[in-house]
Length: 259
Ligand SMILES: O=C(O)c1ccccc1NCC(=O)[C@H](O)[C@H](O)COP(=O)(O)O
Image (cartoon, rainbow, N blue to C red):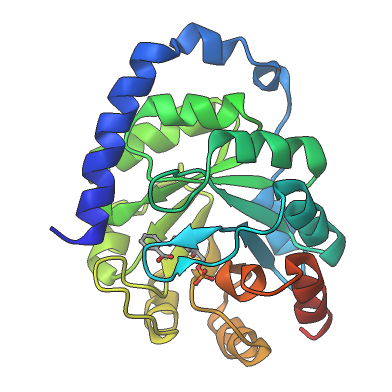
């Protein structure tokens, strides 16, 4: 079993457990159900930098990245740096994140928040909404076309935007549908951890123009942004490169000022 398969097996178990503890009615009672969301796709269309900065404590590929910051410090730093949006990893077992991180981020900033999670069930989309997210991630590698359709429709009905993540042409072709807002190409193969910007470059022309194109993972230099922009990418999701420093917000500020 590769790491992605393991994460999904654990995630399905986790969702069953959580459903037995927190009923849907409790999630739907959250104040965020009555609130308007903020559009990341609009921000990316109107931005020159296109940075989506990620709160990431650790990962299966790199182990501990940084445990020394508070969520508030990191996300306020990212907002002040001029990030278009923030990705908050909420998986606990593999990334050291939580839904509390998302809630703290929501209380701290007024820019779009992505719940970065391995979504396999509508329940997790309700959780995202209940904790202040503006958009969710769907990963094509772990979902069928039918699942992508029903989960993306469910998210859109809650006012959440959808970022679909793909890593190859097969995943892209099976997933294209009008309920997606952004299509992200993950430069990291989540099964082998191989990282290359070539994945973004090769898939770019196959992504229909109506979707905002996002390049995700393994971006660590301004040169990478300059290489990817001519392929039509408007969004760049960056985690480790900021989080591994002593001051993630400052690192994002310096990075964005040089784009
Ligand atoms: O980052 C990992 O090691 C990883 C492993 C398995 C599944 C997902 C993984 N990462 C999630 C992400 O998508 C990245 O955190 C995100 O794109 C930012 O990547 P980076 O800038 O390389 O930290």
